[in-house]
Length: 252
Image 1 (tube, rainbow, N blue to C red):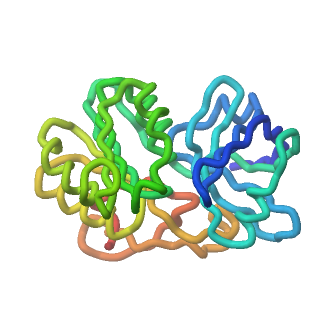
Image 2 (image 1 turned 90 degrees about the horizontal axis):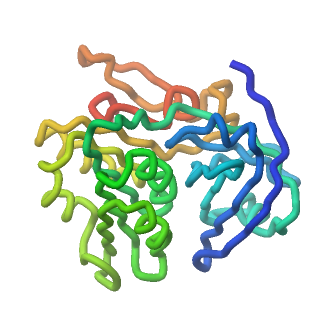
C-alpha cells in the first residue's frame, strides 16, 4: 500500500473545551476516500513523529478532526492558525463496516466520541448513540449528533449532565433493540461493552486506542493481543490491522 503525505488547508479552527479542538481541513482527494473509523497522521512542527487523530466527520472536501491536548505535540498542533497548511497522511487503518440494513448502537467515551459522528451519520437516523463524558465541562458534539437525526443518549460520571453513570448503564436498556454495536473509547469501557455484547449475542466492533509511532505498521509499536479463534494468541497492529477489531477477537 502506498502512503502519500499531502498538505491540507486549515479552513476553520474551533476550541470546544479548555483542552479539545475542532479542525476542518480541506483536501478533496483525501476526503473522497476516507471512511468512518479511519484516522489521520498529522505532522507537528518540530516533531519527528506524527500524531494520530481519528476522523470525526467528512463533508464534501472537508475532513474534520477533533482532538485533545495531551502533550507537547498536540499543544503545538492546537496553536496552528486558520489558513495554515497541515501535512497529513490520510486515511489510515481499517474503520467500521457499517451495514445499511441493521440497527446499530454507537458508543463513544471521552475523546472516543468524535469518530462516532461520521460513523453514526453513515448509518442513518435509525441508529442509537450513547456518549459518555467525565463531567459537563467535557461534553462535546451534542448538536452535531442531534443534527444527523439519531437517538442520542449522554452520560457523565458525576451526573453533572445527562444520565448519571457510565455508557453501559443506558446500554442495558437498549442493547436488545439493536443488531450491532460499534464503540470507541478507553480500554476498560470497551472491555465492559464487549462483555455485554457477548452476553446478549450482539455483534460488536471496537476501535482501540493505542500509542502509535509510524501509523503504517512498520515500527510494530502498537501491537495488541488477538485470539486466533482457537484460543491461541497472535498479535496485530492497531494502526494497520485496526484500529477497528471484532470485540470477540481482542485479548482484554
